[in-house]
Image (tube, helix red, strand yellow):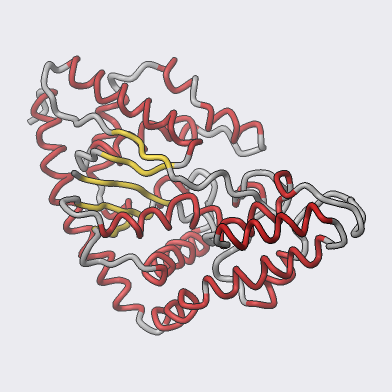
Length: 322
């Protein structure tokens, strides 16, 4: 079985990235009889990041963060998307058998445009490139969030279109794997996203974390009155870190009244600081080892290209381009 996933370097990684994807990626490294391909989706990020210096900074940051959070290059193939140019050729081949109607139904495209992101051709074409990312490595399982399930279904459709058009089973049908983590709320209560400016970034120091955590949106229920933990952003974030007993204890304090949201935010801050302490220490070590990070990405790209080249050759042969 081959597992594949990617993350966009469109800004600093945050709690939503970690609990929605990275935590699962790291955990999957211990599954026996499986290959893991994880990539930094820098081509995809060009739809929103169009500053070369910032993009280089973000790519480097994602690479260091993944390694600091526990990604093991001996267990996973870790690479930059743009270091495997074959993916663009596969994307073009897929685009020639994919109808416009399929792309026009993409929820992600509509949502991003509604949020004010420029409706570029690249943003519209995103599902095709994502399909190429998945299919070129013969991926069986793709860990994604709920908002990406439609893209997996579109990838399945594109693989079927190609295989049926050229009467050859070139591409493997992938399946999505949902994270067990519910939607991670941002500081404003909406889904945590760099696009919405409501993130709690992993790289923040304790002073920065305190400022952001204390700004998390809550309702105006007075201190002395009971509160509902099931609809509170602070409690939802706290639950990502806490044990069942800790969650139950805090929920009881909410419902009893007499506790302000400020106390809940302090409890959340303590959890965030403690949980990511090992990551921050490891990150400092990696910042002093730029050559090591470059070597990991270079070696990962070489391993990924070996697989990609074989798939591309088969696809071109099926099309008559060999």
